[in-house]
Length: 374
Ligand SMILES: [Zn+2]
Ligand SMILES: [Zn+2]
Image (tube, rainbow, N blue to C red):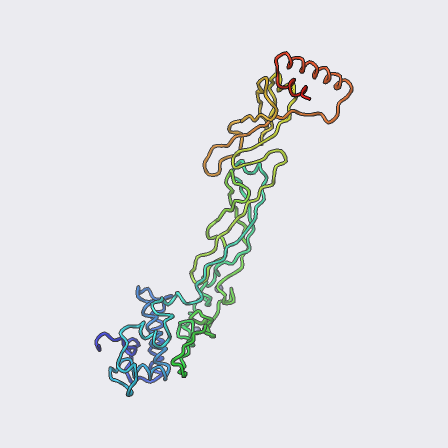
């Protein structure tokens, strides 16, 4: 069992009887060398974690004593001790033993609190229905958090370096191991010195006061695609607030609302319009003028068209969002009823009604049957 054991003294490169200062010195040198932010070595993360764990154990007299006793001696230690001679065959064993299982197998960066994706920004854009006919450019003013241009987000004044936090040894959390009547109790709390980041900034960047961010006012132009619908949300990647610790920035979410049109109703790419026409035009047929969203079109109404008949004007609807082409304009013809009539109109209507009924009677038409039903 001796061969595969992890040796914390070896990790720090110090002798078994090294004093606290020697251990500290060795640790600092290695931590600088393997800090994931500076080292390009592929196993820097793993090494950095090992170095920190070794230091945390060996710099604490109580833990160091426990480690010496149970970890590597291979002897039974004190009589009857259940851990006697068991040894630690992996780093995770050591972490589990001294700190609880929380950090076993987790990369150094994952539990540090300085990695945080940026928040999304939200904006609303109001359009008229005619704006939907083509791609539409809109300028948006954004107040957003951006990475500090001076320190590049490191929070340290250019030329200075972040230092590994002395309180937590870079873990971002501190643990307390207490022996109680119920056994060994472990608690983990966020490091009070570095607030969980694992490092401290001795000389904060002046431009951002050590926050790593700057508030910026930006005006950006976005293009709203033709055919956009009310309630659609456009997501523009990475135009939100900046992320922390190299995490991705948030997105910009643009909610579209479209003012209802007083004349045209909409369903996707289809438009609907109601067209009042004269009774005579439906009876005899006529060519009428139909309003469209961009102008007007002529519509041929055949003789004998009923009121509320719907005609389609192909391609006079709205553009189809991201599919190309345009929908149709649906035109519903409706008999226009005058709200008041003069004497002459009344006479003519009376005559017309009489004629209509006579003709209907001759033809056995439905109008005559309905009107004479008692
Ligand atoms: Zn800065
Ligand atoms: Zn700390």
